[in-house]
Length: 330
Image 1 (cartoon, rainbow, N blue to C red):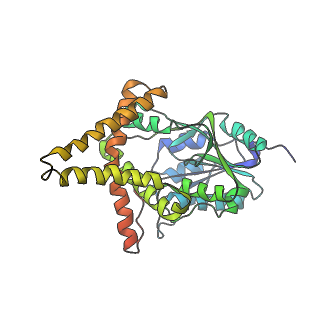
Image 2 (cartoon, rainbow, N blue to C red):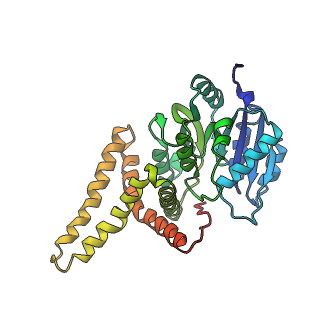
Image 3 (cartoon, helix red, strand yellow):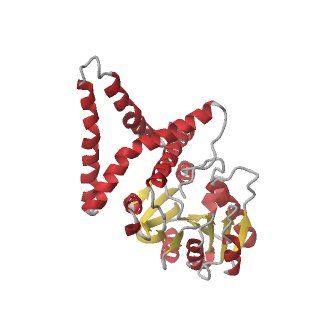
């Protein structure tokens, strides 16, 4: 078997109105892999033209059909296979991320050493964590355990063989499409691995609480849809139960029982600061700064209500036989 190299890799980047973030993203991979495809979703800032100027193949997504990131990645992958049908690996990356030097070579080497691994991902960091407290919260969120994993995120290097074998992303899923793909990969006998290595720098550009809330709503929708699709394998079942508990059951019981218990049931609400303190201690134990751990603990605790909103949105649409459109925080 011939040794793998970056020449066995193509890149699919997706985005809309990412501006200079997209330029930085594409420059981080152009010339370092065999081919790069950018999928543009009706940008109005000249993103597609900027990509072409860099020598990147551009796919203009037809928005007469419902847009999802999953569908964009699938169409980018299809074009990549037309350009270089013998590619063995594909690096997916979001247009607001920069691929760190050396990551692709490291990831390819890992796949060479582990033939049963379908997906390799590394550490995604926030590019400007000090720009806002919301960016810092996301930076903590990206700090996930290394080793064999259940899922990857939007940035990951995948075997073409494995990706094709399970039919790629489910284009109808509006959020959480990567974990959904990974469920099917694991069922097919593949594994996913997260390396203790820098992979991408992400620019959330999150400056307002509304953006954070909307992002949490999207996460709740993803949990609900993922559990509905693959709950038989346990996918996101515990997460959805946790959201129902903290977002609905605890406050409902506390308020409903206030009169008959002469207000004693309101003591249940003390569970929220207790829960936040637990998250804070766990985050500090991972080596995060006190201020970051406190912000993250508060965000997770309050975020249950935003996630509940997303779950309700999913179930309401599902009951009507409809599908929601994408939920964007930018």
